Length: 123
Image 1 (tube, rainbow, N blue to C red):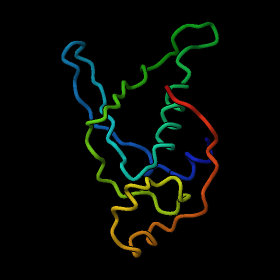
Image 2: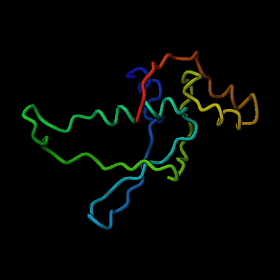
Image 3: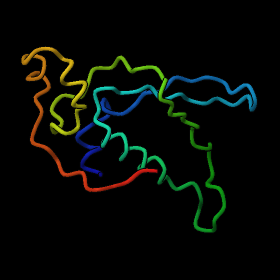
């Protein structure tokens, strides 16, 4: 999965927009969707996000600011950032690619050979 994150680069990661939770008065961050990214990549990024270490060696809370509360919703805003160029072919959503409309736009992606991403299941 590390190779996938490296191939996507920072431009392949989801951005977010902040809002204040009315109940807790704490900021939360609504994740913007990257519609060009394949579902398999999204599933693996969710798995990576869920694996963050929030406790120290004794089981207590780690020092410093708590991690951002990032909300992933199906109706969230679509990111306007351009897709990452040069990713393996299977990193791009088939539906998104089919809607590009021209071979020239597809060639501009400069995609490489498919990369094996394993068989990870996300609940």
